[in-house]
Length: 409
Image (cartoon, rainbow, N blue to C red; front, side, top):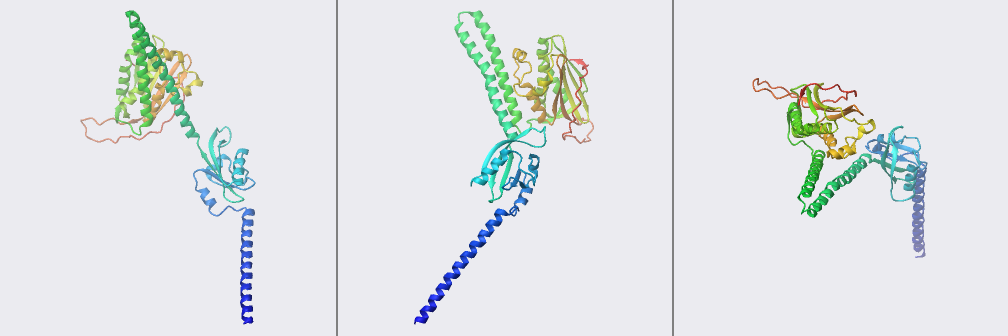
């Protein structure tokens, strides 16, 4: 009986000792794995493959901030394998990620490429993937921020521009009420009220036109349009303005050319260029409208001999609400939206608008659109293949345009 009890006790003692030995062995193996992970310089399995397939800029860095692996888009930002992270800001983000459990995020300005490349606005997110390595992802938000800034500027500028005529209408309405017993004053205030209401309607209409051009995915009434029809419509719409300003519009160049697009939008774009040319031209001068074609491109140029635009301001004239001459624009009722509408209208048709200008010598705005074949005449029934694709637009070398000769509009 005693021998049986001793045998059972020995068995239990052996099992306990075996379990203890197993626990010690497992703990030793885990400690060895942790030590190897902490001291290994190899990237965890699969990370390098993921990096090489990423479209975003991303990299894995070690405890010394050395780039172990990086995606192709990260290279222009200076994330080169074997080199140290560029900049203390990036090192700070990686350090925060290694010292904490949560990911570290920061918005930084980093240069993409060598100087004089402009700094880009990026969001950097760093995550700890082991005791030795951190994973950094960079997302370029420069364009997103630019669009958001444009939206804020548009709202602010629109509010400011609308405030002036709305305030004037309110004041003039009060003035008319106060001068109810003076017919002469009522007529004066009523005329000014009508002018402000017209200005308000024009501004509102142009804001709506610009919004439609930017929001719509497709053109509303796209068809083959004769360039002669576009120019004639614009000339007719601004004939009274030209007569009032003492300006003669001269039309020259080729005829019988066709483009693909919305006739109303294109006519408004040419009309906006004409309106500007008339407004900034001295009385007794000419405004030229010239048309030519080449390399499957149609060029519609509107030239004036007005005050011109300084070179430093030429890049900004197509911005919303920008006016090169504030005083004259206010006097002529300009909204600062005409050229912005022209730019978006032409871009929607696969073209571009260029500018040549010299102070004191005048300006030339040129609309360039893809040329298409005109409709087939009723007589011959042979079908002609229309070249409606967007042609590659080549920028001409800026040069002073020759005076446009032709028929007086």
